[in-house]
Length: 219
Image (cartoon, rainbow, N blue to C red):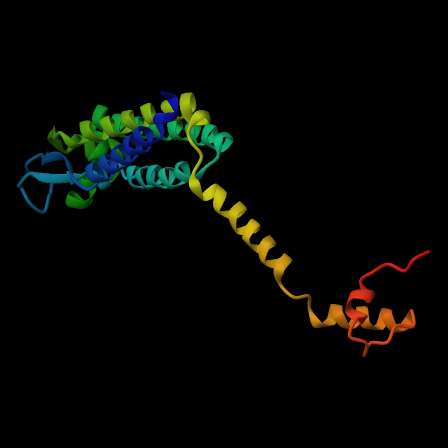
């Protein structure tokens, strides 16, 4: 059973990381600024995940990079990658959870862009209301999926079937070795044998000197 968990773990990682990246690019909050605060517009302002939680982009891309590593890694490396994946999923949960837990702080950059006021305290005073969308929740779901996939890698990764690429190098080495045994020896090696034959008194013009040059002299 554990040997069959490679594909589900990799697919879960892809879905989780992809969900994080998709959520990061969508609208997380709808912001309304206090009237008379000097905003460039009185209309609600949409705040994307790239503003509310900018770290999610790097975390999502790191999850996709783990997928490529898991596909070709050996049993020992899979354990390390499993630990990293659990930590990565935890970071995603933390980044998305902080933004969802404190939306006023998450939209402070958007308030600064709209009013020119900076600082967490002053920008918080200018926020009339903040409404969250479903996308932060989906980002948290993606992070949880990455954590679960990392746990699966830790528990079952050492029993996954080996990648077929691991054996390609061995086959290539065997093919090269076989070709070497049937290939003719280089001319330089034959020249050295002829020279050694001359030192032993053999005639290199003899038709049989090739066989005799490879035979050890009787003692």
